[in-house]
Length: 270
Image (tube, rainbow, N blue to C red):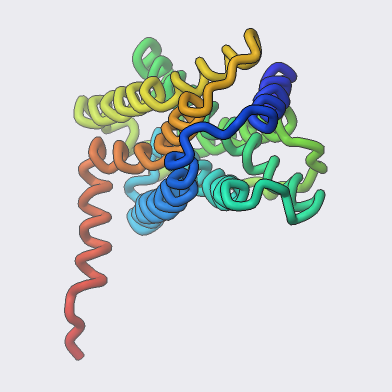
């Protein structure tokens, strides 16, 4: 983590002491970020609303999906607006408290997004290699507890000078979900595998450039504006791909979203 902060300071120094290349791209980047921000918020909000509307979608595995959608939403709300502002205003105008707030969204929720992807992969490995144990022990309550512990660890490791705050414990009953899980067959397993495949492909495509860029910055003091700009845009783009992938992989989710919009546009007769 210290190395990551060091890379940020190196990039800031190089970026502020190097002539600005690609003026047309620099002009377009803020507007691309605005479009990304709006698209991410709409897509994730629609998917989250579908999970809220249809309780049958809230299976133990899908609790991780819901957590990822919420993390994408929160990261976008706490990070992208400030990132857009920094593209228009080179000097931070909002003071120390707002700066800490922005850093909180940048570091904590980006870590939550990355670690939730990893948690989904571990969940699939559990289901693949220990299927009996998975079906017996993996309930909504366990999934929520794991997510809470993961988020607490992310906050403790990544929050910039964040004060500890109380957090209400979520509780839910898993009895009605347990039967659904125990009765699931090949269709549910195939669906979950497709979701994992989409997430892995999206993560490789969207995260590799930024990981390479920051690794080179840490090791060699590397900075190339075009590389870092494209890498950053791809990293944010992954938060838009997530809800799209979930909708593509989950037929019940597609049906729920379709019914939501159908109900909204259908004429109401008195």
